[in-house]
Length: 150
Image (tube, rainbow, N blue to C red; front, top):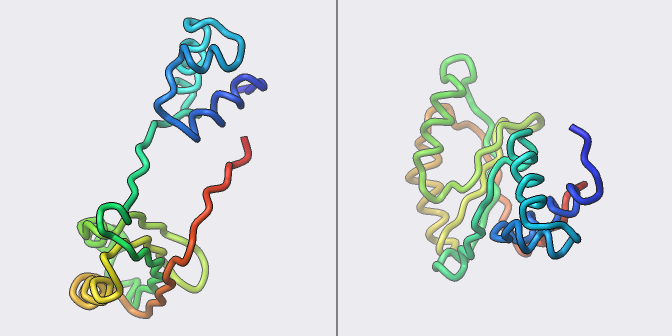
């Protein structure tokens, strides 16, 4: 699908605030509400606009620590990737599971109340998962959301 400047502007605006209405998008970019609505529907139909998300402030909910955990599976032949993925997805503190190339097989984004809570999650939940071998934890210090290439 060919995107024009207005399509890209819509995507930029919606990536910053997914609650924008078609009317507001139209006002910002010189289109009527129906014309803006048709553009949004076309972007959805083409799979470019795949969904809208709510950003949750984990710290406000009491989760003050975010950890990125690299996991290398110990026994790739004996434990299926699906078994590991299913087990790790059942842990509520795990926010994202990425299957990656490199030193580790998986990168997890985990939220915890504090470092003691993260240690509990690591010992009682992560280290008991099928096939877990080596791992490395990196604690998030700060985060900046950068706009993607739209």
